[in-house]
Length: 248
Length: 268
Image 1: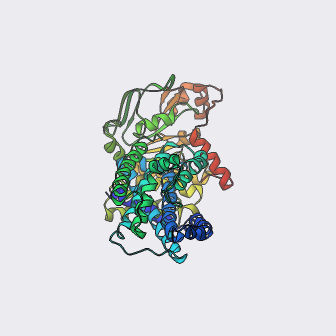
Image 2 (image 1 turned 90 degrees about the horizontal axis):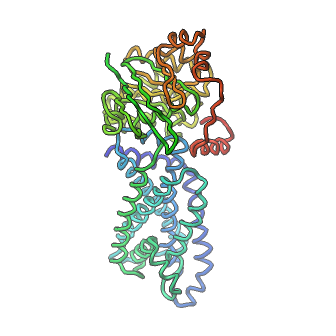
């Protein structure tokens, strides 16, 4: 337990001590929020869909969490390169404790970044509505963080060096984000795209978060809760498995 | 005195390639043991198997009486290790690195704090313990790693090329600490190095490994006498030949190169 705690604390310390990273990782969500939010707002309203900033903001918050959570997993590669990974792997602590500490720390960092982006969305004009589901917003944000910390851990454990990094950005993170319903509604999509959306774990996180915040569900609360919880548990297990197989 | 490390008929195959080929040796408690060999001879593979991170193909290992494949935790508690490459967290202070290690190894809080203070003083970093490790030189990092490896009072200290890339002053200091520790705390030291003068000076016992096999074993004086040489380097070459060994760069080496290129040179 202490090992989980201290590895978690380590990640939080590294996060808080690196303002460049905090600010740097805000760039992309802000870009999408401003470019899409303000760019498409008029069109969205004209189509009779209401306030686009309100629709988009949960997607942007999810995006910030997604990026930071996956990166926290990828940090394993850095720790491998700079040697710290070895220090933890020869300690008399189970690999499971190590990987849980890492994933939890990474998820908390991603969650914190999500909160920062939340505030930025509020400044840009986002207003959540009061509904009985509102407290679930925190739950969904944290589950998205854990889920993708698990996915990041898989890639961080399997990849040997940073060469595969652009591959992950372009073929994993970006498609996950674009085909998640973060920026457009699921209704009226071509069939293939809709299937793609339904296969994307992030879709359920985004939908759950959006539903909790503006009371507008596409899949329904129960589906979102079940899918996100089950997938998070699964990905934490898969991430742990791949981490436990790391050879020095 | 008992045997701190006992290796019997150890084999490690990677597919067709045999990295460690029926190796047997033992290290008595309290000695400083030098494990010497050219690049690719099987030194690091052996250390990995002794330190529980790699399973042998066959053969038996006892470290402090425990089997690294089946009693990982007991073995891990028994040793401290300084790896060939730095393994500190640069974004943490020296003290935080030590503290993290102490917690991972279950050293109780009060003992942890007194031991950390004593050890950083011992390696001459008392004044710098609140500083970030990224501001440390290569030699300072090495000293901190030695201090860290000793925090949980290990019975054995593994040092994989501990003085590589360090100036003679720092090398002397580091060996000074280690010899002192071996005397005062009775720690068994198992080290590898390419500097034969170092091995000659500090080791009580050495084993020379080449092509995965032990080719000689004994005190440095015995090896020199057997090879009829005046220094250990000549004896080493007499035992292992003149040919230069090529090692294939593995993923870690490539990463190291990349890291170096990004940071504008120098060991971290």
